[in-house]
Image (cartoon, rainbow, N blue to C red; front, side, top):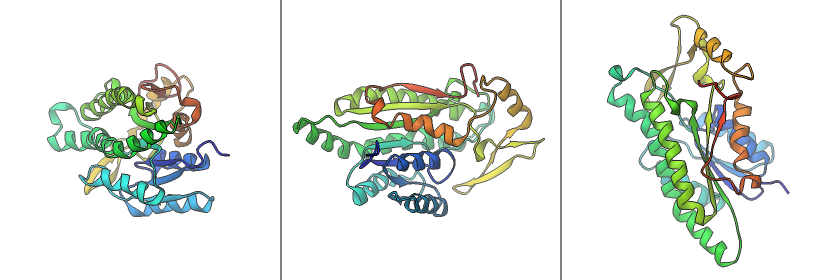
Length: 277
């Protein structure tokens, strides 16, 4: 039997990048997965990939910052699979500027995506998780559920990222608080903080020719200057950035039964100590 056979996992931002790899790995372990992306195309592609491999998945398309998203996300899992066992708060992007040039829109866009959205999703999931946990306790069963919040090395502070650093630091506080509140429900709540992982948001560029992505009608500059990439590599003990597959592996570790006595912890996935990206 696969280690996550029968488990139901919800993964935000799982149409691309690290989230996609998390969803694929969870499915390979036997979990049924609710896929989320801003756009229907990438979400449905991951659903199709999982189904083609013999797994089960369904899409819940839309922005995690929408006021109705959390309830819709949770109810998608309940409607299709009747349970919630794993929640991965992964969706995110960066919108950088130094504080004196950062607009309220920039601040709230990042805070809402990285901090408010996980709060709403976990709040919406509570009744489902609580009811299941109480039923299992009454039957004398000990069943563990998992929450993994995706943070960043930037939680320690990063130039030009007041919004992002604040959100990712706040997520660590949320993780520790929920570990204490939900321990009685046998929910392990942990975080993974990424260093330099190669995704579409960290593509290197030369000069000032950075790429852009459209996020909810906003053209956001993405990528990292080649100079910064080389400097970052020099500070990584393993000598290179991580891949989405490797990043996903660190998240999935917290979802397996082997992590049942770990909670309130932050795992740094950055190729070794001292690599603050």
